[in-house]
Length: 245
Image 1 (cartoon, rainbow, N blue to C red):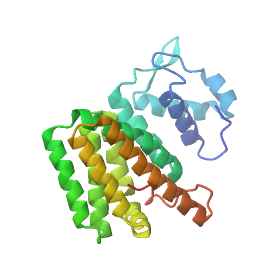
Image 2 (image 1 turned 180 degrees about the horizontal axis):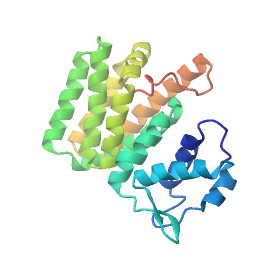
Image 3 (image 1 turned 135 degrees about the vertical axis):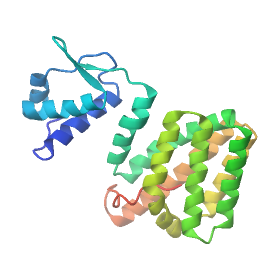
Image 4 (image 1 turned 180 degrees about the vertical axis):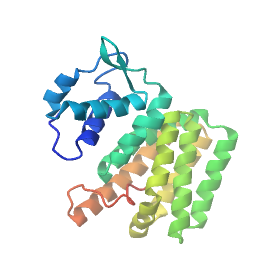
């Protein structure tokens, strides 16, 4: 835990506690430090700590047991997908960090999709890839089908956390992707998508994961390049922007 600056204290305490729960620093069933201990560790008032914890209680992440204190409740997949994950992604303002996050998540999603995709999902993936190919000269349309392609892969993974992540990224970053593709072109992206699709359609998990990893590492290199050109040392553009596909 770190001392909290004297602005937006409740939100800062809430976010720091939320991150500790998400990373497992306080696992399911464990007891949180007392209000007094949290006040001392974070450098804030008891009222600030109490208000922040009340937000965690309202979300169902923590409960207050009489005579025991604050206890971390069971963290099921739905809770992570609908509460913790959105909060953490919404806070991510560093494009490089978001891209690195996606490399890990989407490579595994592609691997699982190659193992689990239904014939209908494979067909939908083919159509999204082909539609993107037909719209290489239209940044808006290509970005739409680009994001759809990644979302279908997440759905085919049948992992609710990957699906939720993909939905959020699609909603938050499509606008930025249009500008990214205008600057860097779409040919290389489309080639990667074609290889990813083929690997999933042929049920080749290792190849699907490898092509996805190379695809997003290529994006990461361009994000780093753009960031250095802006001279912002990794600081992201406004929320309409994030990492591309």
